[in-house]
Amino acid sequence: MKITIGIVDDHQLFLKSLGLMLESFNEFKVTLMAMNGNDLQEKISPQNYQDIILIDVNMPVMNGIETAKWLNKNYPLIKLVALSMNDTDRTIIEMIKAGCYAYLLKDCHPDELEKALHEIYTKGFYNSDVININYRRLLLAENDPLNISEKERIFLEYACSDMTYKQIAAEMKLSERTIDGYRENLFHKFKVRSRVGLALEAIRKNIVKL
Amino acid sequence: MKITIGIVDDHQLFLKSLGLMLESFNEFKVTLMAMNGNDLQEKISPQNYQDIILIDVNMPVMNGIETAKWLNKNYPLIKLVALSMNDTDRTIIEMIKAGCYAYLLKDCHPDELEKALHEIYTKGFYNSDVININYRRLLLAENDPLNISEKERIFLEYACSDMTYKQIAAEMKLSERTIDGYRENLFHKFKVRSRVGLALEAIRKNIVKL
DNA sequence: TAATAAAACGGGAAATTTCCCCTTTCCGAA
DNA sequence: TTCGGAAAGGGGAAATTTCCCGTTTTATTA
Image 1 (cartoon, rainbow over the protein chains, first blue to last red):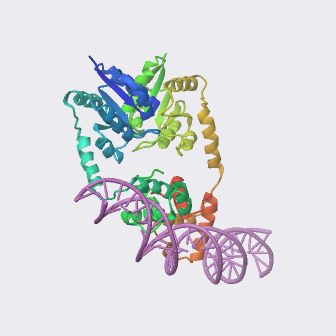
Image 2: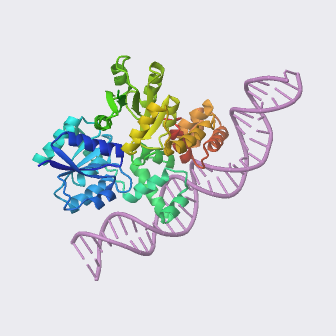
C-alpha cells in the first residue's frame, strides 16, 4: 500500500510537477491536488483519505495557516507538512502552531523531501538541520514582544498606502480615534516617530508586503 | 530529435519536478539544470547546447536579469523564457529587454507551458493573453521618463526615513523651502499625495533601497 | 552682456499627523 | 454578577505636512 499524499498549492506548474515527482518515488501516490484551502475543502472527504498533505504557506483565497487549522480540526489524523518559499517566512511558526508536523523549503533537495515524507509517515515527525535552526530563530523572533494584533496588522496595510488616516478609518469602518490608537501602539512597538518610519519598518519586518 | 530545454531556478523542488514534467511531455528533453546564473555559466557550453532555457526571475547570487543578459550575449541563438511567481513583477519588463522571448507565470497550467515552449521553438515567439495585457501596461510605465535629478534622488533617500523635513533640510544643508520644492516635484512625478506614498513608490521603483 | 530657464528660497494657510488625557463599551474570569 | 482589562471612541492642541502664492540666485546660452 502506497503512502497517499495530498498537495495544496496555488502555483499550477509546481502543483502538477511536484505531483509527478512524488509519484516517481514509487512509495507515494498523489491522490489529491488543490489550488487553495477552499478548493481542498471541496475535494477532500473521508472516502478520499490522505496520509500526508503538503500545504503551501502563501496562497490567495484561503491561505496555508487557515487551511492547516481547518485540516487539523476536521481531519486530525492527517499529517500536515508546510511548504514555503523562503526560510524567513514569519508565518511558518504559525503553520507549526496550526498543527504542521514539519516545514520544508521549496528549494530543498528532492531526496530530502522523500526522506522527510517517509519519516513523517513512519515516525510521525521529521527534524532536518534546517528546521532546528530556523525553528529556534523563529521562536526567538516570536518571543520578542512585537505582538501585532490582527486589527493592527490590517491597519498597517492601509498605513502603507497613500491614504490619510481619515480615509483609512472610513475604509475599516472604525472611528478616527481607534485608528489613532492603533497608530500610537504601533509607533511604540516599532520604535518610530512618523508614519513613514512605521510603513518602512512594517515592510522590513515583512508584515506588509510591498 | 527532441527539443532540448535548460532550467535555471533556485528552488530545487521546483527545478527537479518541472524537469520531470517537461520530460513527461515527450517532446522535450531537459539537458541542463542550474540553481542560478553562476551555476549556469559553469554548466553551459557550446557542446551542451539548449534550444530553450527557462529562467526564474528571482534568484539569489545571480538573478534572472543578469542571467538573461549574459545568455543573450554569449548564446544569442538560445531562446529564453522568463518564469516568475506573480504577474505584478516589475522586473519582468527588464527580462524582456534582456532578451526573453516570453514570460510565463509559475501558476500557469502545464498545458500552457507545453504550448508556449512548442510555439517558441517553432515560431520563435509566444503570445498569451496575459503577456499582451501586461506587456503593454509595463511598457507604458517604462515610457514615462520620470527623470529624477541627483538632488531629488538624495532627498528621496532621506524621505524614506523617520526624519522630518526640517531635519532633512539641515542634513542636506539646504533651506526647508528647497526641500519642499523637491517634495512637490516628486509628488507630481510619482503621482502620490503623501510622503508615505512617495517613500513606497521610491522603493517599488528601486530608486531607494530598503 | 542680456535674456532666460532652472534651482533655491520665502510666507503663510489649510490639511494632516502626532501626542496627551479622558470616557464608554465589551468580554472573559473570578 | 461584578470586576478588571482591553478595545473603541472622544476632544483638543502642537507639530508636521501639504499646498499655493511669490522673489532671489545661479547657470546657460544667444
